[in-house]
Image 1 (spheres, one colour):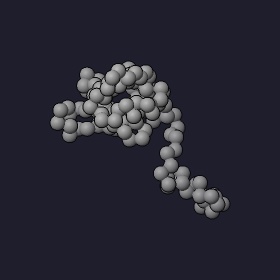
Image 2: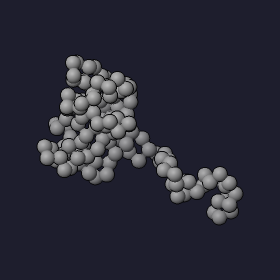
Image 3: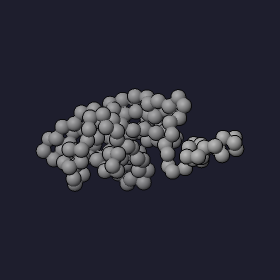
Image 4: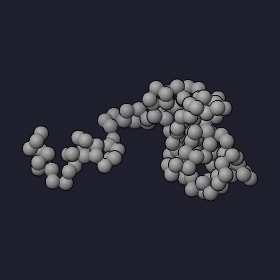
Length: 133
């Protein structure tokens, strides 16, 4: 192995071995499993939802974050864009099993399926996925 590393002048082997520079390498047999359809709840409480709505793309990825310290709902899962803009929550009726999966270390995310602006309410339908690796 040391001969191989010595011959790697660009440092690619070192990146792979040590995962330097924050490179997100694909994992063998990694795939996304579709779970169910839902929507983003609470968009009317997001101050700049109109601006964020304009940047949402159909099929765009949305990131889930657990909020176990949320006073209103200990199973709360907030939803953000890839630019770290919070757009709302997974509805309470959909977050019980999802929060358990996330608490067990599973990576859940969503993709924007449909979107429609109705006054100050952004109606955003999503598809929920489990990233299995």
